[in-house]
Image (cartoon, helix red, strand yellow):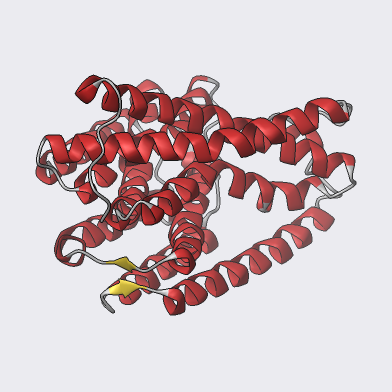
Length: 326
């Protein structure tokens, strides 16, 4: 583990760096997605493929950069805590809070296949965790599983697309503009590629220093502060969907995000350096993540809508989880 080097301004500097890093990650991630989507569309790559690959990667770029930066900085617990905490937050907080605003008609969305894949990914992840370390072998296994799921998703979506006479339009992709000038596309890409590593560095350094100041482990900071921060884009999306009464696809997006976090983020990070698994994960946090995932069964199989009652339950469960972790 690296020595603690307080940032200028002491504790205030650490908090400033953490908030600034988070803001940079959110803005840079959004910029990267816009640039990548529009570049792909200008090059003639189908919008479907863009939504399945580049957008999925771009929206998870903050988590990926944080995890890689944490390994470089000698705080791998922050990387693992970020992913596990984000997956728990995605189910309990990202679905719970918007449900408090308006009923989310998840019953209209068939996500059985992707849900089973997410559970399979979660079980695989937990199994590899009990090896004690996520090393390059675990990384290869996780990335191979991700590749298989992406191929399956692409084939299924392509079949559906042909059956529906190419129903997937460019306008369905957020930030897509087929006429966007190349200068703006390159500017979006540059801002994203520069802002992401800078934001990750600031957030990891600031969060690690805060953890040491309060005697809290990097793992706990990753499970709470960093996890909530990197889940803000998904939360903003689901809140807007709830307000617009267009929440029938939110469940699928959360499931997809969780799969990519487990397989893609830790898969890549494990190739950068080993990630030891703290005993806390094996006895508590991984099982909370699995239990949270299983809470989606009523919405996937029983055609339940996400009502305000469910919103209260999910939100309270998340607050309880954070309380226990802290």
